[in-house]
Image (cartoon, rainbow, N blue to C red; front, side, top):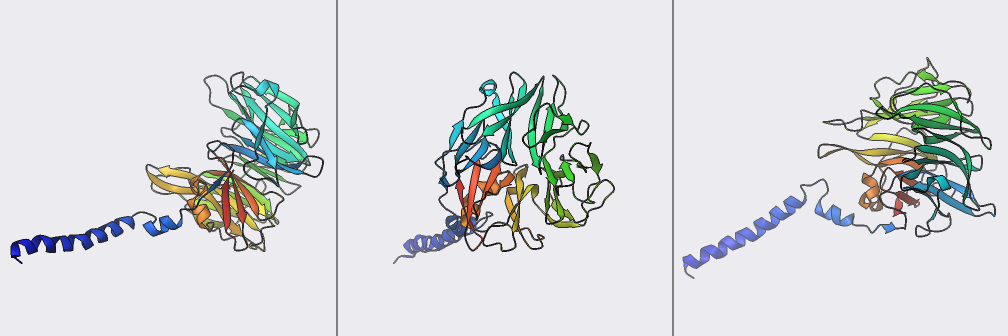
Length: 398
């Protein structure tokens, strides 16, 4: 063959394997290689709830005939389904008569000694109210209201007592927040009595050991020894960052999560601190349990997940960005017992392939059904995780 014809053929033979190498190399340059990406292509089962809504609380309650139901504050309504049903069974409950506009929504739902409480806000008319929800009839009973630019931002059910974070906002002014004691279970109502001064940030998490009560905003910790007494500030642990996420009591210890801010350019550090001294004003904390790149939110505890023989703490995280770089990936973490000192990323392709792994998980709800948890996000709906015997959850987007 003439050399003139040999050269193009040789060039093609060289180009083909070189191009193949370049393609494979390019596929491995991202955070997940091509083969790992294919492996993570897991079908996520979806239910009939809103997918781009915030979930502001969830409870489980009996309808009086031995049938358990889930109730969740999703978007502008309370949604419900049987606990033994599935993700396609959700229905909605009409809001109370004064809260049926497009500007209305439930801000919180909690259960206190068998009574379900729901707070609503109606933005256009600037009113807010507290209601009990009857699980059997799915009807509301008013427990009082507030108005004039104020509303119930969040409810806290602690022991036998109900508390609320109340927002105050006048036209043209920044919002301020106050902690109120609303009363004991069965007698809780608005108006309650304030037990804190005005704060620049809302109260976001609370805990009790059945004697003491702790409340946090994103920048301060408060304590009171009785439900009706005014709270007093508690010193924060040393070197824990600038922003608090959650407070939780379990097994004689008080847990506190924090971070260096939701978006910290160049990186972020999240912390979990613990103390068996139960800090009160003047008390102290132990060293942080962990430091990581997570922006931590709130805690929950599960005792009946088979793969975690000594129980497990769960903690949610924000997804935060600095420019186009992910600072905190979102999702949640597991902290297995008995020491509860080693947070770990959840296992399984179902989690990695889901939107949950990169969503802001604000709360974890643990139902009475074992081996199941729910993740409540700040804008990507409600998720259910069913754990197998190896500690891997299959996730469903409710």
